[in-house]
Length: 125
Image (cartoon, rainbow, N blue to C red; front, side):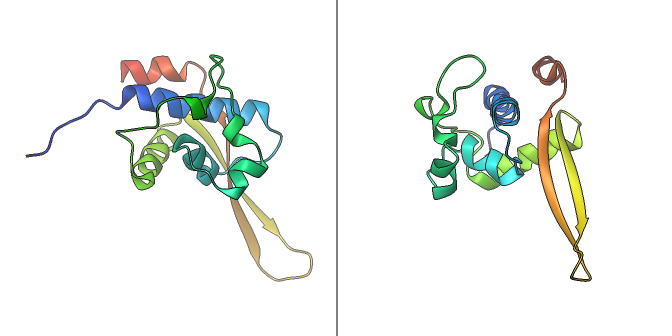
């Protein structure tokens, strides 16, 4: 028998991760970056960009917080991120670029921020 779990607090934390990454770093933030940071991954890219030193907007270091226990594995966190994007809670851009030398388009997906009052919206819905 499956049990329903309330992941609201972890969704709030994901929103904080997006808000902090997009406001404190000048690099383009990918959905994979959000999932890796949210899941407390310890990859070379995380260390190189110092995402493991991330201090959330409420002043706590993310990697000193408890790791997610409901939105695991990463695939579950990815589904949650996709759902938040589809509802307009997390803002995302899809950028197509045409190469000057090659006859194809390249595509990149960039997370650009969160909707105003995003946490309140999640709480009410």
